[in-house]
Amino acid sequence: MSPGSRAGGPPRTRTGGARVVPLPLLLPALMGLAFLLVPLLALLVRTPWSSLPDQLTSPGVWEALRLSLICATAATALSLVLGVPLAWLLARTEFPGRGLVRALVTLPLVLPPVVGGVALLLALGRNGVVGRWLDAWFGITLPFTTAGVVLAETFVAMPFLVISVEGTLRAADRRYEEAATTLGASRFTAFRRVTLPLIAPGVAAGAVLAWARALGEFGATITFAGNFPGRTQTMPLAVYLALQNDPAAAIALSLVLLAVSIAVLAGLRDRWMRTT
Amino acid sequence: MTTRTARRALRIAAAGAGAMALLTLSACSASSSPSSSSSSSGDTAADTPVAPKLSGTVTVFAAASLKESFAKLGDRFERRHPGTEVTFSFGGSDSLAAGITNGAPADVFAAASPKTMSLVTDEEGTAGKPVTFVRNQLEIATLPGNPDGIASLKDLTESGVKVVLCDKEVPCGAAAQKALAAAKVDLEPVSYEQDVKGALTKVELKEADAALVYRTDVRAAGDKVDGVDFPESADAVNDYPIALLKDAPNSTAAKAFIELVRSAEGREVLTGAGFLTP
Image 1: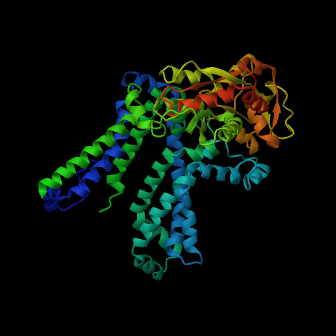
Image 2: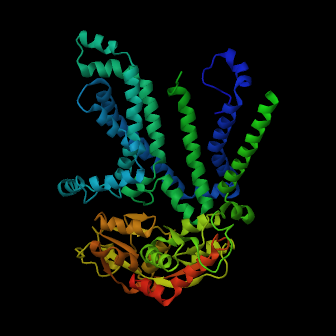
Image 3: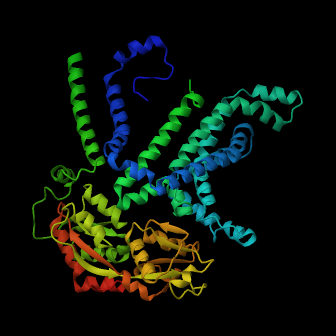
């Protein structure tokens, strides 16, 4: 986290490195760092520390945090189940229009989340293209339900996993899989027993990214799943609505979300996301 | 050579520090420094001399429910005073108020409740006292043709009827709670939406069966929803105050816009949209 520590640089350049960094690079770098950190520091500076215990022990906070954690985890699980095979398809097979498919798969990355929410509503809403039949045949309606939150979060988070896993698959040595298939394993067995263990760190990294993205998801959730405490009100929604009338509460909630995110990213980064 | 680079670097650093200070300022929502916030926001009219003829941009922050009528009034204002431009920021009154107290360069604020207006007046952010210019009443918005046969607030509690309300934190939600309390109806909605348009949209998309929204919103939605009046809405009438802001970059033109809103012509546009006169 500190600006000076660099992942895995050789020790020789680490001591001498700081002095030879050219100023035209150092100054914008430091300003960039400050730009990213000062808003977070401002959150700390303005936190109503004295009333914080009261804010954090109010039942609404834990309800929202619990829901956030459950939904983000469920969305990550769903992303894994659907996203890993999708990544495999993109990395290991040839089919016409694959470039286009890849672009479409990653579209939610750049799409404003609220647009994603509108799209989900039109597809899976009670009156949606698909949702209409879900309602008519199975009596399932997804908007305003916790399942709706999970779907909204999966929609925005899964591309992170797919990209991460696809990249790892491309970097992984295919010869192990080919050896497995020549030894008689079916392609699925080879995937399960050889490829998957091989790319596990990449899958884990993608899962962490997807989880963090799902945890912070706001626009698609409030558009598709609505806002009801305990059922669809996740932390980001609680923060937004608290800000309307009670900024102190919003700051306290933000602080919790910030702490959880940092804990997860910092804790898992060293274990799973070793980039060197 | 090295000293010159260092000196230049220092100058860049100083500029950077200034930028950071500004950033910190805005991040810290400093209500105690009106001088710096007005100097940073006065970009349009600060150096134009005061002329009898109106010119420049009038920036109006207005409650989302005013969108249709204010857009119409803005057009008329621009046509009457060539050289002026009225720009709007429509949104939840609370977020608009927060923007204003944090230094957003606005001239006029029209809020959907006195409570949200007081967020600005408490910070002494208005020039003079806000005046109520219209009132708004709640109505039940239902699916077209009212298939659930909703005739009263009580009908909303029937099982199978999905109702969305505005969140209690925003004016339309506060009004809804007041009306439900007056009717002694205990209603569990499927969602508390973040503003009145959000609630209405869920009905327009047929995802919800009914919503408690303003009469003006039902009117603005045309045939996409039906409106059902209910007697308890009289207990939850929202007053809409409007005020000139203290740090208004273009206060002359802003005053003229407020006059237009409060004139007979303005009232006609607003009542045409479903607002009540105070």
